[in-house]
Length: 329
Image (cartoon, rainbow, N blue to C red):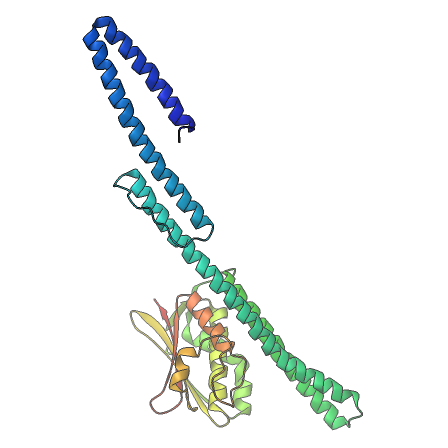
């Protein structure tokens, strides 16, 4: 403490002023000189005691900050009275809590990244293994019909892998915040038409009936391209649930608070325990007949929520699933 530069400088100045005051006191009278000596000594002792205690508290605070920087999980300084040091201690405590929260978030992100990479590797390994098996069969002398069937199956596997990789890249870009949504009012009818365009032929092949209700005047404030893709993923899920000869209904409504799209199918719906996990990445349900990679609904939710909307799923009272997408006005 005594080696502190500022403290020593103040002691030197105080000593000079005390010596001058004592000299002037004795020059006036002996009593004045004694009084100056006593006052200077009392003031000096009080200053040394006060400053020593203050520097001791500062040293404790510095030590605690050093512990925090070395991953210590606590910051505790006892005996601080109200004042500047107490305020500083409070602010440092807040900073420590904030740093701890960010550190925990980073650790969770690392765990999530590791799990995601493991899931991605697993999802890609299955179609790659199937493609390798098909290629090994093609090396053998197969007749033309079997060869064409294997080629078609390989093309389907490659298309699924391409869709999976593309969806994962979109999810990573959305998570990184590098995508800027071009928000504009879009009529509900145009939005539904754009989303349905690539699905009309598959619906016809599977004899899935479609009913749409998008009244004039219903608008959504969103990025049309991205929201259309989110709707397509939800519609694909409804098509798989409805199956052959199924039906899908799309209804658009609005009120003073929000505009809504409800997509309903007549499939088997969801199990109650599955509802909280439907939009989780790589979640495929507990059914043995579950298909897909568990990416489509997760991508749809990310697209919708990043634009300020909400998406929910529930079972229809008469059977089937209901997806509700809402965008505030």
